[in-house]
Length: 160
Image 1: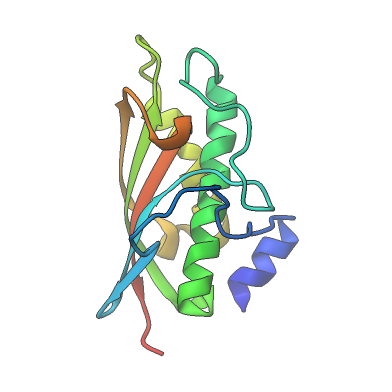
Image 2 (image 1 turned 120 degrees about the horizontal axis):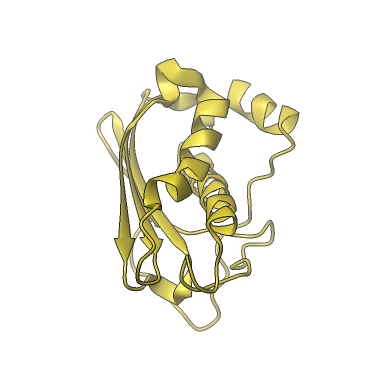
């Protein structure tokens, strides 16, 4: 339970599952296959599983700093899904790929700085050896539910 201990030391809390009234999402948040966990796109969540404010486009309704924070919350959202599926976050032995999408206003081009919010959390928890990952950070014209950030990932896990 080393990662759980680090979360507590950093004062980080994993959120409850996403609460979207009237919406059913017909796919798994985490798909296990062999020694891999493929994580569907996640967005930021509050502790009670709701979408945090502000929503909208980065560079318009959302500042770069707010989007960085949203990316950090997205890391916690993803970790909550991984914990529910894996039972123990210490089963993650390598973060191999992260794909970050940012809901951008025309002219905003600092997507990597926004997605750093996600990467910084992962690196704080797992360190460079396990937490370092290949990564993309791209701008999108829109994201689901008007969230500022959506991120998906692939991790290597130990068997049960």
